[in-house]
Amino acid sequence: MKFADLHLHTHFSDGTFSPEELSLRAREAGLSTVALTDHDTLEGCPRMREACAKEGLEFVPGTELTADTAGQEVHVLGYWIDENSPALQSELARFQKVRHTRIEEMVARLNACGVPLRAETVFEIARCNSPGRPHLARALVEGGYANDFDHAFDRFLKKGRAAWVPKARMKAADAIRLIHDAGGAAVLAHPGLYRNDGIIPRLAAEGLDGVECWHTKHSGEASANYVRIATSLNLATTGGSDCHGMAKGQPLVGTVRIPTAHVEAIHARRPSRLPAAP
Image (cartoon, rainbow, N blue to C red; front, side, top):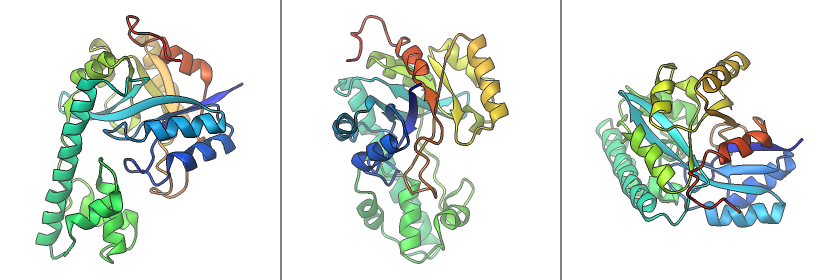
């Protein structure tokens, strides 16, 4: 049986692995299919595609969008999206600017707390178009203002802490539509983290294609629950490790894997008017 990990990040957002290192590790983990789902960017897809071809892996281009439904923050994964979609690229560029502004605002709050960090330092660490809180946490650790990654979040960056700034979101219905218009399939990421299963029927009514039932932070009981919910709503079931390289401790690539039959099922949900992926 062949297996896939459909939730992976590189240093083009808040991961630490390059596309080449991630692809190598995926092959070593025994995977046959991987998806790159960096936050608000497709920047790493060309290199990831080339690296996967070298390692003999099937590659699924994707991204992870931050959205809102009824006041609840949710993340929507887009798979097999057209990387040249003007509408998608325009929206991603807008959110990348928002991400830079958020970093600047969080640094300003840190400065007000007596932490003399510079936004430019964070951007130099990030070296990508989609900077986020993990990059700010690394800057705090490297600057000696936090003991480690978790301490940086606990002391400054979690919701309710001194440097917290809310993340900009698009409406979930708009995120789903954007993915569909780019030829992709839209999947709700890690539903167990939201503690609100009532949002899933709402998203299904808005065109959601699938649910990420298997995830690093889902227990076996939670995964079974989301399989039941997805099946009852006629949604595809997917899964992935949400690997961020070494950013969150140990490399998770391949620790959550799904049979490639699930990959075929979610691929079949893509808009039928568009050509099939190669």
